[in-house]
Image (cartoon, one colour):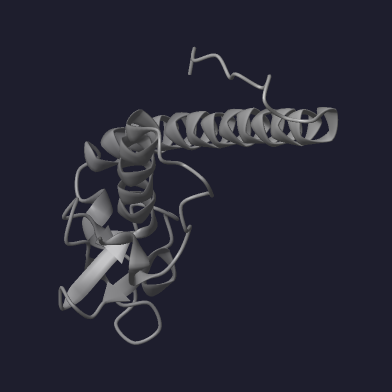
Length: 138
C-alpha cells in the first residue's frame, strides 16, 4: 500500500474502473482482517477455557475438552488430537488421512489462522482462506 497510481494515460471510464477495483480490494482486505481478528479472539477464549478445564483432575479422561460431553466406549469414544494431545470426541475432530490421526476443531482453526496471517503479511490475500478440508496443508 502507499503507492500512487498514475492514471493520466487512461480515459475517464478506465480510471473510474481502476478506482472501483482498488476500492473493492481495500474492502475485501478489511473484511478478511476483521474475520481473522474475530477468529483470533475466538481461539484465545477457547484456549483459556481448555487450560482451565485441563487443570481439573481427570476431566479430559472422562469428557471431551471441546464440547465437555462425556466419553462412552461405543457411542462417543475418545480420540487424541495430533496437535494439542487433548482427548476429543468424534464430533469435535476430523480425521487427517495423510497424518493418520485426528485433529480437533480448535487446532484446525489455529492452522487456518496461521496460514491466513502468513498470506496477509505477504500481501497475497485475494480470497478468504478455506475454512474446512485438508487443503489447508500447502
